[in-house]
Image 1 (tube, one colour):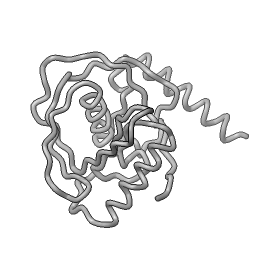
Image 2: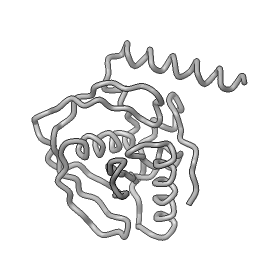
Image 3: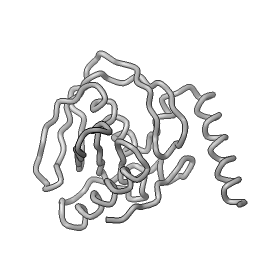
Length: 172
């Protein structure tokens, strides 16, 4: 397994719409293993393939607490079915928008249809943090960042700071 570099905003690749996966094979499982290793190293709780520069509809996630055994989840070609009309605000952050957090309002529950690590079709009822995380990561598959759910002013302020930080880092 390899830790891959994580793209950060405003990298234009993060705006790409990811392509469906044709089949779950050893190469895709190797990508998912690398993604999981990268997410743990960051550290984070979810990662979409586009965040490591691969425009495929693949997500990895692990919501286990610090004192719990790892509980990795793999979502290939996920689709959200029946999002609830009830919404809930949740403070979100993102490995591609480092060090910034803000509240985003999302459906409180949703059903997710996807292929698992072995290519088997699964259906998952998600609520709470799981529902938030799957929706956040699925946004990445559509080229959407959590800051796109914020006001234009907040979003522009964050992107301006990120550009400045990247310029300063490149000058070192």
